[in-house]
Length: 257
Image (cartoon, rainbow, N blue to C red):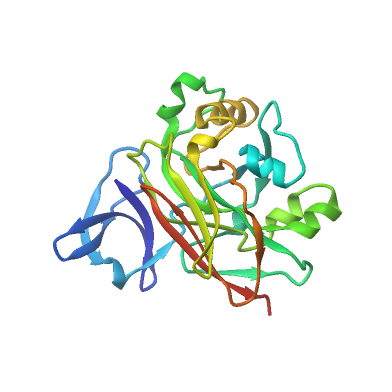
């Protein structure tokens, strides 16, 4: 099942994206997607709605250096335990929204990632039960002001600018994510290509590690790390992250006015 958030005129609703003989439609939900799915009976063609970020999380927990090749290209070692940091909810944007390059930075990088969306209130989750708290998976771009990351000595500002966490286009709830292709392009040129089987710490391990420190709420998002090939974005670029079995998250890049 593909769960989306969409805007129709001034109304915003969760929806399920369905494939029909006449193309894709969004079937609006009567309530949130946590628990039994209830349809409102209203349907629209996908092209007649605006797809939004599929979730507005209370927090985004991101994992650093969770691909060995990315750790190597950044000049660091793979950590024995997951290395986590937080991105603010205000950094979230949806598909086709603009990533805004801040005036404070001269090097803003893309980082294509698989994102896990939490489906239930949980803490201290045993790895063997991690699948029980997952709503599904979506595509993410952990945009980073790389020069500020280096100069600040910590990552909050570099990772936290408005528009620095594109998510979408929807949440896939029925997917085996153990070995999926993940690819990032800039202006249609392939810049990153990896597989989720290369994750150093598995999704179950990440959920257990994070939930041992903080309570996870429905809709919270865990970014699982990025493969090698990160690089800079420039005004006028289009960056797209594709994950096998989910879809493509595309965003244009603009200088902040």
